[in-house]
Structures are given as C-alpha cells and as structure tokens.
Length: 386
Ligand SMILES: Nc1ncnc2c1ncn2[C@@H]1O[C@H](COP(=O)(O)OP(=O)(O)OP(=O)(O)O)[C@@H](O)[C@H]1O
Ligand SMILES: [Mg+2]
Image 1 (cartoon, rainbow, N blue to C red):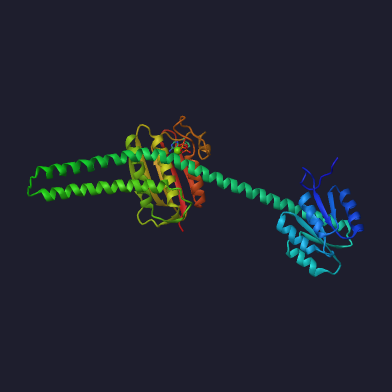
Image 2: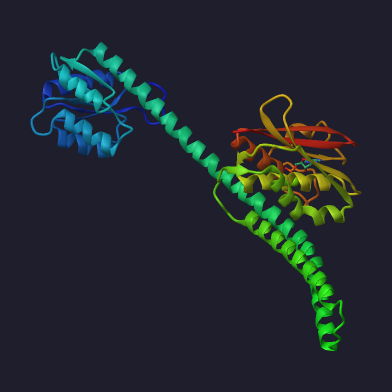
C-alpha cells in the first residue's frame, strides 16, 4: 500500500532530486522512497527542469554547485514556471552566501551536504507545510473570487427585477403630467386659432406655460432618476446628500404607494452631514425596502421614511417603517437569505433583502429590523459618517 505524508493523500508527494553525484542521488533516493515519497532523479539542471515539467512535483531538492546550470538558476527557473513548487537547496558547508541567495529567491529551505536524513526530514516537513499553506490560501482566494462574482450577479439580478417594477410605476407617473401638458398646449392653440385677443391673454398663457414647464421638468426628473438607476455601473463611492437620495427614490415609487392607498410621511432630520456611499446602490436599497413595505400593506397604511443621527453611534440611520402585516418570528432569522420569500410565485424572488444586506455590509454599515406581527415593521440602515 502506498504510504502518504502530510495532508496530500490523493496521489502522494512527488520529489524531483537534482544532483550531479550519482552516489548521492542513489542514497537519497532510497531514503526518500523508504519514507513514502515518489522520487524522480536528474543528474543536471536541464534534465531536472524537464522532469519538473513531466512529473509536476510538489518539492524539488537541488544541489547548488553543479556543472552547467547551477542550483540557483534551477531555483529561479522553477519559481518562474511553477511558483507553487517548494525548492530545497543543498549547499556545501560554509557556502552561507549561496544559501542566503537561495532563500531570497524563495527557496523553502537549505540543507548542508553531506545530507543527513534528520535534516532532510525536517526540511521536507517544512516544505510540505509551506506547500499546503499556499495551496489553502490559493483555494481560499479562488473561493473569495467566486463569492464576489456571485454577489455581483445577485446584485444585478435584483436590480433588473426592481427596474421592471419601477418602469411600470414610472410609466403611470409620466402619463399624468403628459396628459396635462397636452391639454394646456391644445387649449393655447385653440385660443390662438380663434384669434381673440383679450387683454388678459398674455397673463393666461404665462400661467399655462408655467404649468407646462413644471410638469415637463417633473417628467424629465423621473426619467433621469430611472436612467441613473438602470445604469450598470461599478461601485462608486462619493458624497451623498440624504434628502436628495430619499426624494429621488420616492419619485420612482410614488405610483406604487398611491395604488395601494399608502400615505407617505417623511421625517428627515435637519443638518444631516453628507455620507460617503454609492448613490446608486443606496437607492437600490431604499427602493427594495419601500417595495417590501408596500407589499406588507395591501390594504393601505402609512409608510414613514426617516433619516437621523444614530442615538448610540456616530452613524446616520435611514429608516423605512410600515404599518403592515409584520414578520413572523419563525421567518425573521431567514429574511436576509438569498431566495427566501413568503410571497406567492410571480410576486417575490427573495433577492431584495439579501441585496440590501450585501450593499450595506460593503459600506461598513449595519442593517437592523424590528417587527411585530399585525402592527408593522421597521428596517434601519446605519451608515458610518466619514
Ligand atoms: N416590510 C416587511 N413586512 C413584512 N415582511 C417583510 C417585509 N420586508 C421583508 N419581508 C419578508 O422578508 C421576505 C424576504 O424579502 P425580500 O425583499 O428579500 O424578498 P421578496 O420581497 O419576497 O422578493 P423580491 O424582493 O426579490 O421581489 C419577504 O418575502 C417577506 O416575507
Ligand atoms: Mg422584496
């Protein structure tokens, strides 16, 4: 049965041993094979490098002084082509400068010749620990990269869902002022066609045009808010004025609230400092919370949006409070999990709160929730002031 060493158990540890002295190769090979390693030997640097490509060893032991390519050059080459491979160099007694050079080039260790099996065992154990440590770090880095990718995908997916809902709401929001604009324009055309020139006509026209201007600029604000929201932009932190953020978010959700007969109240503390955050992402959070609140009040109620300095920390808190159905105690621990939803199919995907959580974490902030069944729910997003 093949013996295994360290934590590498699938195919065992492979060692390439490079030394120009035949006797040393033979004796060391026997010692290493006896300890359970798979050993490949080479008599010079070039052959050793070729063996590394073939056998993909985790560890290389190389003599420093060899005719042709020396051990330092072998080490440099290996670190370039197989940086994860651990290299132990063997130096003659007194060649401290070469040993130091090897360590500077990221050799895992050096041993002095003649090779003693004890020193070899210690150097190999150290090399294996280093190899496993690096491998774990690499695996963890890959895991983290995948996780970041996953989070970004979820964020985008949630945004597209919100965008679909917002678009429906915004179309209604724009339709009303457009109808008003059309009416005033038609009225002015009719008056002009009739050719009546009454004394109060310029004043009347001024009032109509004033209304047309106001309504047009409202439409334009709504459209630009939706466009900003829909843009797929990388996280961009900058100063954010809370009142502006709340105003623009409300503008996009108002129709949905009106439809459900929900009264909107705002309580924004005066003189709040700017916060440093990603405007677009914070807007996504507020819109998600407002949509959830609206869903929780199908028969109407009150939605309160507040912004205040936290009483207990140097944070600014944004709060979304509803007077809706509340969250059952058994659901509370799960609401931030991706794809957790209590809504009927076609109504909720379960991405809203997990997105909010991810975004606020990314802002070094915290999310809190208080809820009472039948009374209502408050979500607080607390963000640090820069
Ligand atoms: N204000 C609230 N009142 C009552 N329950 C809520 C409230 N906000 C969230 N929930 C509960 O938390 C669950 C998860 O919310 P989340 O926003 O993550 O998903 P969703 O609203 O179901 O679907 P999505 O947001 O993806 O459309 C909801 O299904 C609901 O049960
Ligand atoms: Mg939701």
